[in-house]
Length: 230
Image (cartoon, rainbow, N blue to C red):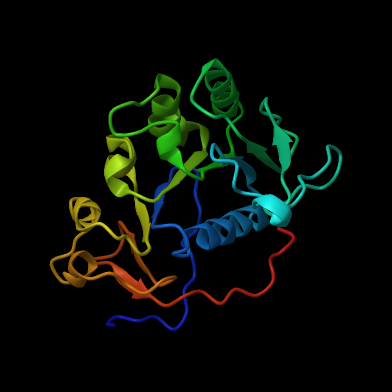
């Protein structure tokens, strides 16, 4: 492996940012998402976790409880909501598909502003052939209201085009499909890092890229201490 970093610090998280976290199940994508959200919460952001697959709290006997209303919510223990509540520091919304409830929810997010939204698996709600207007408005116009929008997905090919076009920050974990890795090459410069396309990286390693970099950087798995209650 080349270009290894001994340490990694996430970029300053801003309301005008659009970011993607890509990688197969178990590759480290969800761990990174939780880490970034905890960083955002410590910086004072209100957080909305959108969890259409209902896996954020775990499954089966390992499933953790949501925070009770009135209890201090955290990334690992958010409050479950069906309507946006600007008074909750961390809330989780679990629509099965995009519907009128989503339109209302994200319209209120936009009106309130100053919110960090993370879609844990975007392709269940919007994909390469189906982009609801409410999602498009959030993604393309949220910047003016200081609404950060990030998406996680296993397959870059299925993500809405507007997400890829406007993403300034990329976290690229292990992706099995060569076709999916080629999709990434259309948005991330790979002339000096052809191995990003040609080779699979080990689990929990990731390529990191933002618009201020000349090329992606390969990063070893994070060793994060603390932050459990963020």
